[in-house]
Length: 202
Image 1 (cartoon, rainbow, N blue to C red):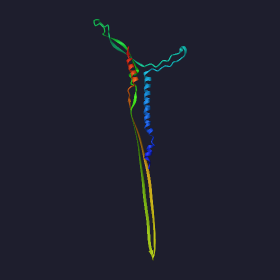
Image 2: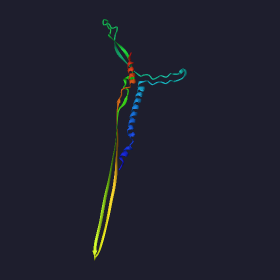
Image 3: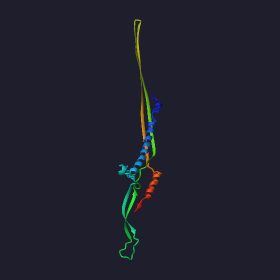
Image 4: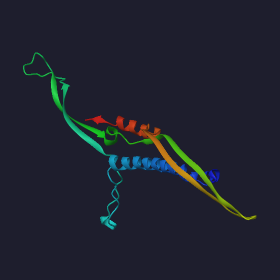
């Protein structure tokens, strides 16, 4: 009969349990790097390295914050408005330019694994059957002739046995991951607040 306890002990649980955990840690790491790359690529213009030498040298240009410009018409009160003067208007049309940091207009990805459940089930069924069969046969004969007796007998015995052992193995692994869009880190949230304060209409 199969040793089920020994077979269960031989399972490498570090693979079944540790593998999904390592994958979750790597996914969290990749999500953090993706957030950094998103801010660098979307929120800033690329830096330009220095080029040339001597008098023709061009200094390097660091990455600059990317802005979005909006131009619109705005009605502002006319300080010289005089209702007694014909043609005097209470409002003047003014052209306004609005500069908005691009990062303040977007949702910055901040995925975080909130919950992870690993379900590993190992099912071992061992069935052992044994069949035993026996067969006995015999015959005898008796003859008598003139005080002479003749007796013949024969017998045979046959026994057959067979055994069968079957072990059924079933392994199932289920991984449930719940990811949420986490709150921004305190430092990044502070920077975005400062950028919002820098929005100016000219």
